[in-house]
Image (tube, one colour):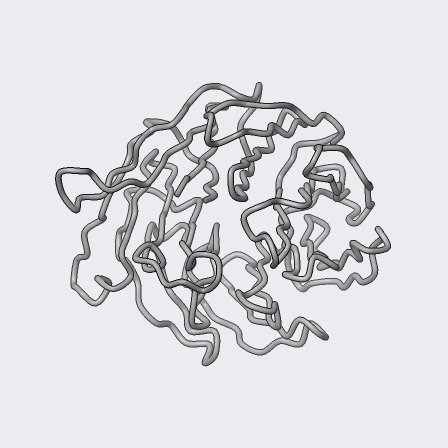
Length: 313
């Protein structure tokens, strides 16, 4: 399993989660680190053997993880690339089919992933795109922008099909695992659960402090991290708080990755793991089965000594 993190110092970091041969101890083995952008990295994405990063230098970089190498750049955006996401077909979940990128010019760009060529540029927001999420079907995507709107992009027709005004600016949006019946949205400390069919509000949850990153988990859980320096889990079926890793980091949490079961539904030990990255420069791996303990210890950690801004895996 691979993790990719971006930093304010323009560095991209790659790690592999491995078990030491002499024991059951987990370790984050460094794969690569170098200044891949000429400005801070704002977003990262991973799908199978491929990684991508978007920076404030208006560029997207593509990486081949098995060889730990950069294989190209996409220079189509005309603004900082604030959100990127791969789409993989359910029939081949480890092979990326498309890459979507949202940028400060308010547009979403859709790329073919083999080869990486621009298919369509879709104007969506009057101001920058804050985040985007691709539906599991690959037929549509949700975006939130700095113009305080939520929009839906029809990826089949290549155009915006829906837009609505929000009462305040949202910064994160994600579909739930499975068939994407629900999606989650973050506006400052507020986390909301919505029906994907009509965007109807189902639950509203108050995290207390500003939420900076979210990651859907198995069993209807949603993990959040942010200004409180903790990693929290929410039961999205009931809209109630489930549990929390208190003081997971010494600074705000900027990225979360929930490891999922292997292809075909095979249960793996790693499906109980969650990774967190912080602006304190540290990436930590946690076992959710240990969260009932008063002070759970991280299974593994790596210190990049940089201000991390995003995490994908």
